[in-house]
Amino acid sequence: MSKSRFLPIIVAFGVVAAAASTTVIAASPTPAPPPAVQLDTATFAGGCFWSMERPFDHTAGVVSVIVGYTGGTVAHPTYDDVGTQTTGHAESVEVHYDPTKVSYDKLLYIYWHNIDPVTPEAQFCDHGNEYRTAIFYHNDAQKKAAEASKAQLDKSGLFKSPVVTQIAAASTFWKAEDYHQHYADKNPIQYNLYRIGCGRDARLKELWGSSAEPNVPPL
Image 1 (cartoon, rainbow, N blue to C red):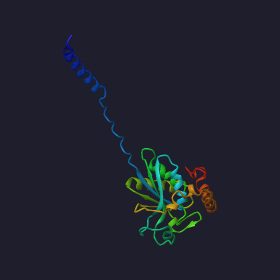
Image 2 (cartoon, helix red, strand yellow):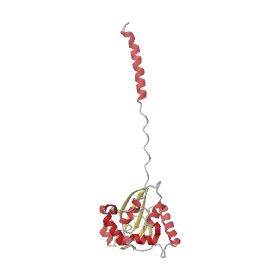
Image 3 (tube, rainbow, N blue to C red):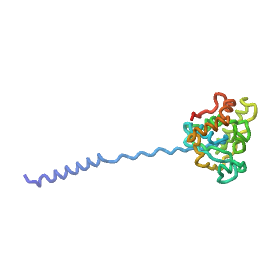
Image 4 (cartoon, helix red, strand yellow):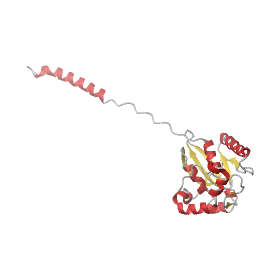
C-alpha cells in the first residue's frame, strides 16, 4: 500500500488533535479583585496620647492608630512646642477604622470610658491645655453623634459636674515623633510606672465603675 494514501488521514488527525488541544488549554476568565475597603477617620484628645492609643489599637475593625497633635494653630509642632501651652494643640489620636466592622458610636463609647470628661484643661496628673479632652469631628454625622453622646452623659446623673469635653471640627493632624508611636507597648515598664503614678486607673474606676477602660489589655 502506498504511503501517500495515508497522508490525508494523518493530516486530518492532526487537525482534530490540535483543535482538541486548544479547547483543553483555553484560559478561564480572571476573577475581578475585591472592592477596596473605604476607611473612615476619627480623632480624639484624651490627655496623654500614650494612654489613648491602646484602647483603639485593640479594637476590632480599627486598622491603625497614630498619635499626634491637633486643634491648634502652629504648623509642624514638636512635643516640646506643644508642652509650652502656646500652640493651642492637644495631644490626640487619629483612628483609621473600617465602618463595616466597628461603628463611630462604638468608638465614642470607648473614648468616653477612657477619659475624665468633667475636669477641664487636665487629665489625671497631667495639667495644661494640651491635655484637654476633645472630640474632633470629620463630618456632620460624627458631629451629631458626638453631641448626642455628650448630652446623654450630662443627663445620665453619673457625674456631679457637667461634661467639659470640647467638640470641634477636625483640622490638620500633625503626627508626633516616632518614639511616641505605640510607646506603651514598646516600653511597658516605663509606661506602667507613669500610669500608676498618674492615678489614671483609680480615677477612671471612680468615674465609670466596672465599665471603665474598655479594650485596654494588660501589658
